[in-house]
Image 1 (cartoon, each protein chain N blue to C red):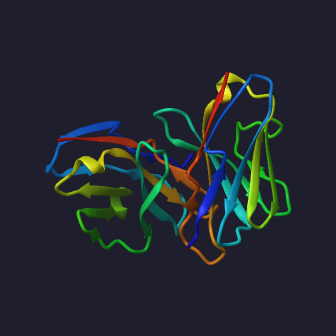
Image 2 (cartoon, one colour):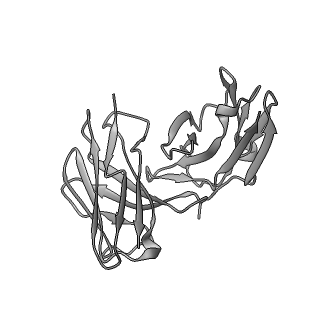
Length: 113
Length: 115
């Protein structure tokens, strides 16, 4: 199976610390898309980013940044100066030729005040 | 734009009864919708792909006779959990994409508890 692996099950940081969430994916597709979603306690999924497999440029959006390394099949997510409101489960996901979105196992981020 | 709604948001039912969950695309048409299931503290598992006007495509291991999916219109897909059992208790989430869209839009989810 073409898995998406998030090795960190839970991470706890103190507010204002930087934190990086790891994501490693498997795929046989030439063209694919990678995503990050945030799931707060309410349960609703919040879309954060979509990245095309041909675009390896890193991206920054406010306190969020993403590092896509095709050579290592990784798509890591960094939150700078974390805040309590960042506490949530974060999912990395991959979409390939089947157009199905396959999720990673998720990382629970707890930001302590 | 591109809002997906689900109804109900929360439902409690008794073992042996059936429960229907609705997924609607409010401001766009969706020929394809996806149903996911999420157990507590677990990932989202794709259950099936719902295709408007045709049969749903189920993922391996998902019982199609237990989880009936109907996609009768371009804005509505329903998931019916038949003869529910406590192990069916879960968070069910649907998603849909606009025809020209690149982002999969998710509904708010339905929490099912079977007693």
